[in-house]
Length: 346
Ligand SMILES: [Fe+2]
Image (tube, rainbow, N blue to C red; front, side, top):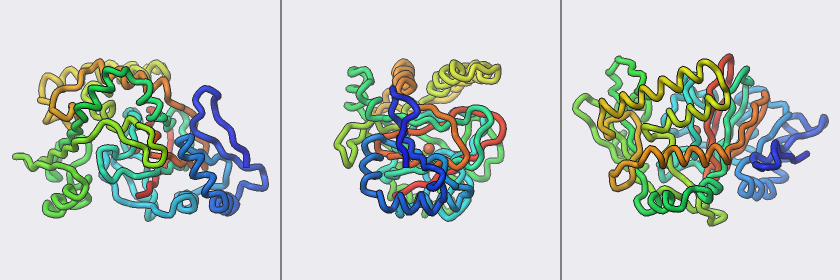
Protein backbone atom coordinates (compact mmCIF):
# COMPACT_ATOMS: atom_id res chain seq x y z
CA UNK A 1 0.00 0.00 0.00
CA UNK A 2 1.23 3.51 -0.84
CA UNK A 3 0.88 6.62 1.30
CA UNK A 4 0.68 10.14 -0.12
CA UNK A 5 -0.84 13.61 0.33
CA UNK A 6 -2.73 15.80 -2.13
CA UNK A 7 -0.61 18.79 -1.13
CA UNK A 8 2.70 19.49 0.60
CA UNK A 9 1.19 22.52 2.34
CA UNK A 10 -1.80 20.90 4.05
CA UNK A 11 -0.98 17.28 4.88
CA UNK A 12 -4.59 16.24 5.27
CA UNK A 13 -5.88 13.62 4.59
CA UNK A 14 -3.26 10.87 4.50
CA UNK A 15 -4.12 9.00 1.28
CA UNK A 16 -3.67 5.21 1.18
CA UNK A 17 -3.95 3.48 -2.17
CA UNK A 18 -3.17 -0.02 -3.37
CA UNK A 19 -1.52 -1.37 -6.50
CA UNK A 20 -3.38 -3.60 -8.97
CA UNK A 21 -3.12 -6.70 -6.74
CA UNK A 22 -4.42 -4.91 -3.67
CA UNK A 23 -7.70 -3.41 -4.94
CA UNK A 24 -10.15 -6.05 -3.71
CA UNK A 25 -12.37 -5.16 -0.75
CA UNK A 26 -11.23 -8.26 1.14
CA UNK A 27 -7.56 -7.33 0.63
CA UNK A 28 -8.19 -3.86 2.04
CA UNK A 29 -10.13 -5.21 5.03
CA UNK A 30 -7.41 -7.77 5.83
CA UNK A 31 -4.76 -5.08 5.51
CA UNK A 32 -6.65 -2.67 7.79
CA UNK A 33 -7.09 -5.38 10.42
CA UNK A 34 -3.42 -6.37 10.25
CA UNK A 35 -2.23 -2.76 10.51
CA UNK A 36 -4.79 -1.41 12.98
CA UNK A 37 -2.39 -0.11 15.64
CA UNK A 38 -0.27 1.75 13.07
CA UNK A 39 -3.37 3.18 11.32
CA UNK A 40 -4.80 4.41 14.63
CA UNK A 41 -1.56 6.32 15.31
CA UNK A 42 -1.61 7.81 11.82
CA UNK A 43 -5.25 8.82 12.20
CA UNK A 44 -4.50 10.59 15.47
CA UNK A 45 -1.47 12.30 13.98
CA UNK A 46 -2.94 13.42 10.63
CA UNK A 47 -6.65 13.70 11.52
CA UNK A 48 -8.00 11.74 8.52
CA UNK A 49 -7.11 8.78 6.29
CA UNK A 50 -8.56 8.41 2.79
CA UNK A 51 -8.63 4.94 1.20
CA UNK A 52 -8.65 5.44 -2.58
CA UNK A 53 -8.73 3.11 -5.55
CA UNK A 54 -10.26 0.07 -3.85
CA UNK A 55 -13.21 -1.98 -5.08
CA UNK A 56 -15.87 -0.48 -2.78
CA UNK A 57 -19.13 -0.47 -4.75
CA UNK A 58 -22.08 -0.40 -2.34
CA UNK A 59 -23.17 0.99 1.06
CA UNK A 60 -22.69 -2.53 2.51
CA UNK A 61 -19.11 -2.66 1.20
CA UNK A 62 -18.58 0.69 2.89
CA UNK A 63 -20.03 -0.58 6.18
CA UNK A 64 -17.70 -3.61 6.04
CA UNK A 65 -14.63 -1.41 5.53
CA UNK A 66 -15.67 1.01 8.30
CA UNK A 67 -16.30 -1.91 10.69
CA UNK A 68 -12.88 -3.37 9.96
CA UNK A 69 -11.36 -0.09 11.15
CA UNK A 70 -13.69 0.42 14.11
CA UNK A 71 -16.36 -2.09 15.13
CA UNK A 72 -18.29 0.32 17.37
CA UNK A 73 -20.61 1.84 14.74
CA UNK A 74 -23.72 3.69 15.98
CA UNK A 75 -27.04 4.65 14.43
CA UNK A 76 -28.27 7.47 16.71
CA UNK A 77 -28.10 11.00 15.33
CA UNK A 78 -29.12 14.27 16.98
CA UNK A 79 -27.62 16.69 14.46
CA UNK A 80 -29.26 19.09 12.04
CA UNK A 81 -29.07 17.37 8.63
CA UNK A 82 -31.94 15.30 7.25
CA UNK A 83 -30.52 11.82 6.48
CA UNK A 84 -31.80 8.63 4.81
CA UNK A 85 -30.91 5.17 6.12
CA UNK A 86 -29.07 2.90 3.62
CA UNK A 87 -27.98 -0.05 5.81
CA UNK A 88 -28.05 -0.73 9.57
CA UNK A 89 -25.30 1.85 10.11
CA UNK A 90 -24.91 3.74 6.82
CA UNK A 91 -26.90 6.90 6.06
CA UNK A 92 -26.92 9.48 3.29
CA UNK A 93 -24.53 12.20 4.47
CA UNK A 94 -27.14 14.93 4.08
CA UNK A 95 -30.40 15.38 2.21
CA UNK A 96 -30.02 19.18 2.32
CA UNK A 97 -30.49 20.75 -1.14
CA UNK A 98 -27.41 20.88 -3.38
CA UNK A 99 -26.93 24.65 -3.14
CA UNK A 100 -26.94 24.68 0.70
CA UNK A 101 -23.55 25.31 2.24
CA UNK A 102 -22.57 22.93 5.04
CA UNK A 103 -19.95 24.72 7.06
CA UNK A 104 -17.02 22.95 8.70
CA UNK A 105 -17.95 21.23 11.94
CA UNK A 106 -16.86 18.42 14.21
CA UNK A 107 -19.91 16.14 14.22
CA UNK A 108 -22.37 16.91 17.05
CA UNK A 109 -19.73 18.98 18.89
CA UNK A 110 -22.51 20.33 21.11
CA UNK A 111 -23.28 16.90 22.60
CA UNK A 112 -21.30 15.19 25.36
CA UNK A 113 -21.61 12.01 23.27
CA UNK A 114 -20.05 13.39 20.05
CA UNK A 115 -18.74 10.47 17.95
CA UNK A 116 -15.00 9.72 18.07
CA UNK A 117 -14.81 8.84 14.38
CA UNK A 118 -16.72 9.39 11.18
CA UNK A 119 -16.49 7.58 7.86
CA UNK A 120 -17.64 8.98 4.53
CA UNK A 121 -18.02 7.05 1.28
CA UNK A 122 -18.52 8.26 -2.27
CA UNK A 123 -21.09 6.12 -4.09
CA UNK A 124 -21.61 8.58 -6.98
CA UNK A 125 -18.93 11.15 -7.86
CA UNK A 126 -20.25 14.71 -8.12
CA UNK A 127 -20.23 16.28 -11.58
CA UNK A 128 -19.30 19.71 -10.23
CA UNK A 129 -18.40 20.79 -6.67
CA UNK A 130 -19.83 18.68 -3.86
CA UNK A 131 -16.45 18.13 -2.21
CA UNK A 132 -16.40 17.21 1.48
CA UNK A 133 -13.56 19.48 2.63
CA UNK A 134 -11.90 18.70 5.94
CA UNK A 135 -9.92 20.88 8.34
CA UNK A 136 -7.64 20.30 11.32
CA UNK A 137 -9.37 22.15 14.17
CA UNK A 138 -6.20 21.93 16.29
CA UNK A 139 -4.59 24.23 13.71
CA UNK A 140 -7.69 26.45 13.69
CA UNK A 141 -7.41 26.83 17.47
CA UNK A 142 -3.70 27.75 17.17
CA UNK A 143 -4.31 30.27 14.37
CA UNK A 144 -7.24 32.18 15.88
CA UNK A 145 -6.73 35.73 17.14
CA UNK A 146 -5.67 35.26 20.81
CA UNK A 147 -8.11 37.93 22.04
CA UNK A 148 -11.10 36.33 20.31
CA UNK A 149 -10.02 32.88 21.44
CA UNK A 150 -9.68 34.05 25.06
CA UNK A 151 -13.21 35.47 25.04
CA UNK A 152 -14.62 32.19 23.74
CA UNK A 153 -12.65 30.21 26.31
CA UNK A 154 -13.86 32.43 29.13
CA UNK A 155 -17.54 32.58 28.20
CA UNK A 156 -18.18 29.30 26.36
CA UNK A 157 -20.99 29.07 23.79
CA UNK A 158 -24.72 28.44 23.71
CA UNK A 159 -26.07 26.58 20.67
CA UNK A 160 -29.73 27.34 19.98
CA UNK A 161 -32.06 25.36 17.69
CA UNK A 162 -35.79 25.90 17.19
CA UNK A 163 -37.80 23.05 15.72
CA UNK A 164 -41.34 23.31 14.39
CA UNK A 165 -44.23 21.04 15.33
CA UNK A 166 -44.71 17.82 13.31
CA UNK A 167 -48.24 19.18 12.62
CA UNK A 168 -46.85 22.39 11.12
CA UNK A 169 -47.16 21.88 7.37
CA UNK A 170 -45.90 25.36 6.38
CA UNK A 171 -42.53 24.77 4.76
CA UNK A 172 -40.45 27.78 5.79
CA UNK A 173 -37.21 28.24 3.87
CA UNK A 174 -35.51 29.01 7.18
CA UNK A 175 -36.66 25.90 9.02
CA UNK A 176 -34.73 22.63 9.20
CA UNK A 177 -36.58 19.45 10.17
CA UNK A 178 -39.35 19.23 12.80
CA UNK A 179 -38.75 17.88 16.32
CA UNK A 180 -40.27 14.44 15.66
CA UNK A 181 -37.77 13.98 12.79
CA UNK A 182 -34.93 15.02 15.08
CA UNK A 183 -35.85 12.61 17.87
CA UNK A 184 -37.48 9.93 15.66
CA UNK A 185 -40.58 9.91 17.88
CA UNK A 186 -43.66 12.01 18.72
CA UNK A 187 -43.61 10.89 22.37
CA UNK A 188 -42.74 14.00 24.36
CA UNK A 189 -41.81 12.05 27.51
CA UNK A 190 -39.19 10.02 25.67
CA UNK A 191 -37.88 13.22 24.03
CA UNK A 192 -37.48 14.75 27.49
CA UNK A 193 -35.60 11.67 28.72
CA UNK A 194 -33.33 11.55 25.68
CA UNK A 195 -32.56 15.26 26.01
CA UNK A 196 -31.57 14.83 29.64
CA UNK A 197 -29.32 11.94 28.69
CA UNK A 198 -27.54 14.07 26.07
CA UNK A 199 -27.37 17.20 28.23
CA UNK A 200 -29.73 19.13 25.93
CA UNK A 201 -31.98 21.74 27.49
CA UNK A 202 -35.41 21.66 25.87
CA UNK A 203 -38.37 23.99 26.09
CA UNK A 204 -41.83 23.31 24.62
CA UNK A 205 -43.26 26.43 23.04
CA UNK A 206 -46.83 27.75 22.74
CA UNK A 207 -47.17 26.73 19.06
CA UNK A 208 -46.01 23.13 19.82
CA UNK A 209 -42.53 24.09 18.68
CA UNK A 210 -39.44 22.98 20.55
CA UNK A 211 -36.35 24.95 21.51
CA UNK A 212 -33.19 22.93 22.08
CA UNK A 213 -30.17 24.61 23.63
CA UNK A 214 -26.74 23.31 24.53
CA UNK A 215 -24.27 25.25 26.62
CA UNK A 216 -20.75 24.11 25.86
CA UNK A 217 -17.08 24.96 26.25
CA UNK A 218 -15.71 26.40 22.99
CA UNK A 219 -12.80 23.96 22.92
CA UNK A 220 -12.05 20.35 23.74
CA UNK A 221 -8.90 18.59 24.89
CA UNK A 222 -8.02 15.78 22.51
CA UNK A 223 -8.42 12.57 24.55
CA UNK A 224 -5.24 10.96 23.16
CA UNK A 225 -2.81 13.79 22.43
CA UNK A 226 -3.95 16.38 25.00
CA UNK A 227 -3.96 19.08 22.31
CA UNK A 228 -6.59 21.83 22.42
CA UNK A 229 -9.14 21.62 19.60
CA UNK A 230 -11.59 24.30 18.43
CA UNK A 231 -14.80 22.35 19.11
CA UNK A 232 -18.08 24.19 18.65
CA UNK A 233 -20.64 25.04 15.96
CA UNK A 234 -20.28 28.86 16.05
CA UNK A 235 -19.65 29.36 12.33
CA UNK A 236 -22.36 26.83 11.50
CA UNK A 237 -25.23 28.06 13.70
CA UNK A 238 -24.52 31.81 13.90
CA UNK A 239 -27.01 33.97 12.00
CA UNK A 240 -24.28 35.73 10.03
CA UNK A 241 -22.33 32.56 9.16
CA UNK A 242 -24.05 31.40 5.95
CA UNK A 243 -23.56 34.74 4.16
CA UNK A 244 -19.83 34.86 5.08
CA UNK A 245 -19.39 31.23 4.06
CA UNK A 246 -21.06 31.83 0.70
CA UNK A 247 -18.64 34.66 -0.10
CA UNK A 248 -15.86 32.10 0.18
CA UNK A 249 -17.81 29.58 -1.87
CA UNK A 250 -18.43 32.12 -4.60
CA UNK A 251 -14.74 33.09 -4.66
CA UNK A 252 -13.95 29.42 -5.29
CA UNK A 253 -16.76 28.31 -7.63
CA UNK A 254 -17.39 31.63 -9.43
CA UNK A 255 -20.81 30.63 -10.79
CA UNK A 256 -23.79 32.84 -11.50
CA UNK A 257 -25.77 30.65 -9.01
CA UNK A 258 -23.24 31.17 -6.22
CA UNK A 259 -23.28 34.93 -6.86
CA UNK A 260 -27.11 34.97 -6.64
CA UNK A 261 -27.18 32.83 -3.48
CA UNK A 262 -24.51 35.02 -1.91
CA UNK A 263 -26.64 38.14 -2.42
CA UNK A 264 -29.82 36.33 -1.33
CA UNK A 265 -28.14 35.19 1.90
CA UNK A 266 -27.10 38.79 2.68
CA UNK A 267 -30.74 39.87 2.33
CA UNK A 268 -32.08 36.90 4.30
CA UNK A 269 -29.62 37.48 7.14
CA UNK A 270 -30.65 41.14 7.33
CA UNK A 271 -34.35 40.15 7.28
CA UNK A 272 -33.92 37.45 9.95
CA UNK A 273 -32.11 39.88 12.26
CA UNK A 274 -34.93 42.40 11.83
CA UNK A 275 -37.86 40.05 12.31
CA UNK A 276 -36.88 37.51 14.98
CA UNK A 277 -35.02 37.70 18.25
CA UNK A 278 -31.90 35.48 18.48
CA UNK A 279 -33.64 32.92 20.71
CA UNK A 280 -36.33 32.28 18.09
CA UNK A 281 -34.06 31.76 15.07
CA UNK A 282 -34.06 28.25 13.60
CA UNK A 283 -30.36 28.10 14.51
CA UNK A 284 -28.13 30.56 16.27
CA UNK A 285 -25.26 30.65 18.71
CA UNK A 286 -24.37 33.15 21.43
CA UNK A 287 -21.69 33.22 24.08
CA UNK A 288 -22.52 31.09 27.12
CA UNK A 289 -23.57 34.21 29.08
CA UNK A 290 -26.22 34.98 26.38
CA UNK A 291 -24.25 37.94 24.97
CA UNK A 292 -24.08 38.10 21.17
CA UNK A 293 -20.98 36.88 19.32
CA UNK A 294 -19.99 39.78 17.02
CA UNK A 295 -20.33 39.09 13.27
CA UNK A 296 -16.65 40.07 12.84
CA UNK A 297 -15.61 37.17 15.10
CA UNK A 298 -17.60 34.76 12.93
CA UNK A 299 -15.99 36.13 9.78
CA UNK A 300 -12.54 35.73 11.37
CA UNK A 301 -13.23 32.09 12.34
CA UNK A 302 -14.39 31.33 8.78
CA UNK A 303 -11.22 32.98 7.38
CA UNK A 304 -8.96 30.88 9.58
CA UNK A 305 -10.86 27.70 8.69
CA UNK A 306 -10.67 28.35 4.93
CA UNK A 307 -6.89 28.93 5.21
CA UNK A 308 -6.46 25.51 6.82
CA UNK A 309 -9.06 23.60 4.82
CA UNK A 310 -8.22 20.68 2.54
CA UNK A 311 -10.47 20.51 -0.54
CA UNK A 312 -10.14 17.54 -2.90
CA UNK A 313 -12.50 15.89 -5.39
CA UNK A 314 -14.37 12.70 -4.61
CA UNK A 315 -13.71 9.52 -6.61
CA UNK A 316 -16.21 6.64 -6.71
CA UNK A 317 -15.32 4.13 -3.98
CA UNK A 318 -13.40 6.58 -1.78
CA UNK A 319 -13.70 5.89 1.95
CA UNK A 320 -12.38 8.42 4.42
CA UNK A 321 -11.99 7.93 8.16
CA UNK A 322 -11.96 11.16 10.19
CA UNK A 323 -10.88 11.70 13.80
CA UNK A 324 -13.90 13.77 14.86
CA UNK A 325 -12.05 14.98 17.99
CA UNK A 326 -9.48 16.88 15.88
CA UNK A 327 -10.82 17.26 12.35
CA UNK A 328 -13.94 18.88 10.94
CA UNK A 329 -15.85 18.25 7.71
CA UNK A 330 -18.36 20.15 5.58
CA UNK A 331 -19.81 20.16 2.06
CA UNK A 332 -19.46 22.52 -0.88
CA UNK A 333 -22.48 23.20 -3.12
CA UNK A 334 -22.76 21.11 -6.29
CA UNK A 335 -24.86 20.38 -9.30
CA UNK A 336 -25.66 17.13 -11.07
CA UNK A 337 -25.78 13.74 -9.39
CA UNK A 338 -23.84 13.09 -6.18
CA UNK A 339 -24.16 10.39 -3.54
CA UNK A 340 -22.03 10.51 -0.41
CA UNK A 341 -22.77 8.38 2.65
CA UNK A 342 -21.73 8.47 6.27
CA UNK A 343 -21.40 6.22 9.29
CA UNK A 344 -20.00 6.98 12.71
CA UNK A 345 -18.79 5.37 15.92
CA UNK A 346 -19.61 5.90 19.59
FE1 LIG B 1 -21.62 16.48 9.66
